Image (tube, rainbow, N blue to C red; front, side, top):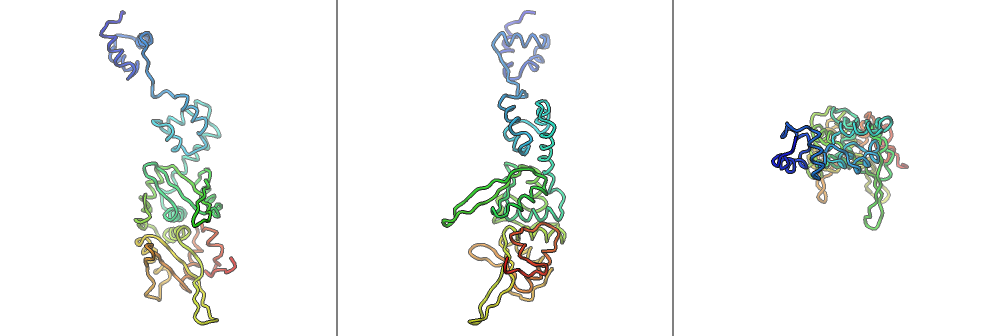
Length: 325
């Protein structure tokens, strides 16, 4: 059937915007193939957004099964996990690479249900982590001396990613840092809902709510491993008399430190009324010294959760600190 002027106008105005299938609904008396042939004759084209471009396919070949699926999808705007996995199967990227990708997906469900293990890592993230909500990104950074601990973190969350190293110069000295980035909308949500860890938390961090006793202690250990210190408190009373004892120091927001203080006060009551959260050079600190610090270290050391080796290897089972470590 011959094309009329009105039909060609409809074809010209719509084909490159909505494609042959939609034009066919506007011109039901024309066959689908006749619309395609007529459009081709008129020099019209339609870029189907569902069609994978060569650039997208190259990205799939390069990244699928090697990076977190959410990071991959950031490079493929408009593509869903289901579409990407289907495309991977059609490209022959299944098998081992698909199983690796499944590992990247499975790590997303580490924080939905609170337990002792994820409470520890949440505490460490509260201290040394960052959340970027718009990018669905969670990052954690530690000293280069703590690579073993970050490897343990990756192992326990089931995330076979690499650790990135960077350096910064402070006061003329070079410091090496290690960083891990996790792309996961689930982490961003679960850390906020279960542990009160939000973006830009440095000055606003609130303590977690609803944790039981063991989970609270694990969170405190994680925070201590990140923003705290374990060492000695020394004071010279006389010329040849030096008093030395264990000391635990926490840094953070006033709300978080008051929460930590309340829990530790119940754990090992303080006999000194002056022990409190104090502000020092714009930073809130809470310190515990002497036999009470030793008693608290003994209890925290026994909690069944990770402990940063650099800080805890020097703590003996009775809570005392080995001065040689």
